Image 1 (cartoon, rainbow, N blue to C red):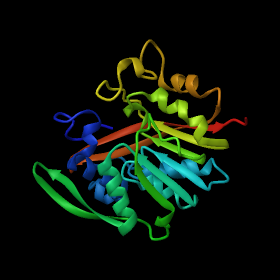
Image 2 (cartoon, rainbow, N blue to C red):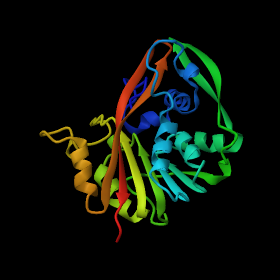
Image 3 (tube, rainbow, N blue to C red):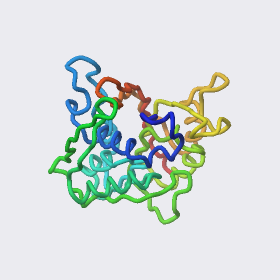
Image 4 (tube, rainbow, N blue to C red):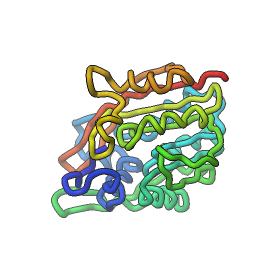
Length: 258
């Protein structure tokens, strides 16, 4: 997802900046009132990380181990821990991983919210005390080159990740080894393909009449069955009077037997 300082910082480096970190902390841990100070405007999308985790959980009857790949600052990982006993969150950004780890340790985080120009305000993001934070671990990693020591999972979440990878196909190729038969993967994305993140020849869709869902089917159909599709809105605040309201496509893929 693009962030407010995209004009000066592009590609993966953007996710190491303080502006981006605070924007994502607000996106993950802010209340609707924290994010959107207006009674009018979008009424959906402010709880997107929780919505993604809930959708995936509904499609996995036996959920013990979950992987949140591209976990950002960790809200979906914690939400998956409402059911899963072991959740691993992996993100390429060390700043995001450090923030998620701090939330695990403290259960709350201070967020500097951009209001107008140089004006900011501070709010506190909190986790539901009912979530067992000990169930969650975070580590830095590359979704296109995951370590060999990962075991299999019952569920894998890839929220707004696929169009921010330098080689999406390499990531998808690893999924059959990560998901047990009967387990599920949820992939969500607005499919905002940009060459700042993904070379054009690596895009899964958006060219020559092909859409990204067709590209996902091509790479996953041998090992996974597409069982569910829905549209998922998300709302990101840039400042008090400017927001990104986007709609991701969410697809659930169940690992075939054998």
